[in-house]
Image (cartoon, rainbow, N blue to C red):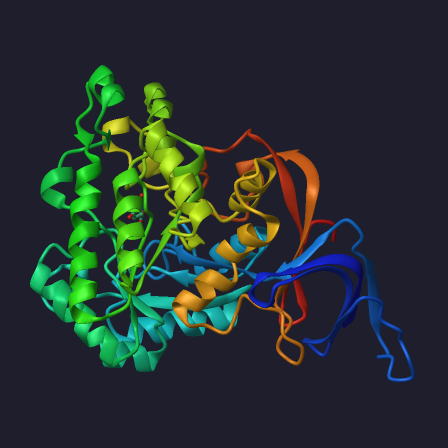
Length: 430
Ligand code: DOR
């Protein structure tokens, strides 16, 4: 099926495009983007025309941090359900973290994920390999083998690499294999036993806290190691004002560092924990309002390059229990876009800057061919209705899990259609 989108607002931040245009897709590829396309004798036989007036046409969104849970925890999510959630959220490419069971620390697991994604996936899946064997933090995984099998980055996400020598070696070896190292910055000695952010709320609740410094000392360490080794470093799920400041300073010195945050770190703060609702339990924890403000500033001034979801599905067995025992994590694939668009309505980011944080920026950081609209290339794109107002309903999500603290929230901005390689993989209206 060939498709012609008529008169959409084409927003392609990588190429500096923001204009009303027609977009023609033929045989799965972007054929033309022009202000007003005349269909001549080359007119393709079967053509679906879509009125895109008032809609945004953007590069397929890229989520550089998701947990698909397969292999091993298919009752929480599978590659099939997770990528269905992704395309419903406007994403055409996701990078999946290695904390599966078994951990993705070898070629067999990487190949399994890629094969499953090819067979059952709705969008492109880019596996992230582990830094250390079993993500146990003791010995390095085989980066060469992982790279050859198809990983785009390495991370022990879910856990930090506590051993500084191992992190140094990881950065050095990653450079040889042109792999990105993604840091889950957490000092386990400082965070141990913590259930939420350390501050007045944790004191009032009588819950043990996780201080900002648990994140910041590791951000500082990893920045120093990246500077020393000259390797590329990416800081995952940035949550504190101090981390933003450290990353900003390092970027100013020319350190090859990039950073991401997640919507819950710019939309929510630790006051939500006053309810003891485990839906708000996440690692790193929701922080103080001043941290939220610093994250927003970091997004605005470019210190934080990308918004990822850290989509972390958990079943009710792990989540719908006493706060103390509940698992950390928030699902995000089907709620992120309208929360990001709030930043545009609030004047913090331009439309183009907001889309860049979920398209060309993460694609560039991961080194994957995505996040830009190029004629002749596979048509991965997302059509957004920026005005549509609705209530987020996690019961209707494609994800297998329901741990979404934004359920019931009134939002604005909806994914109308998602295309991967010219194929409509999600349509709000069938
Ligand atoms: O809240 C979190 N959940 N943080 C992590 O780092 C890991 C994730 C998970 O895998 O559930």
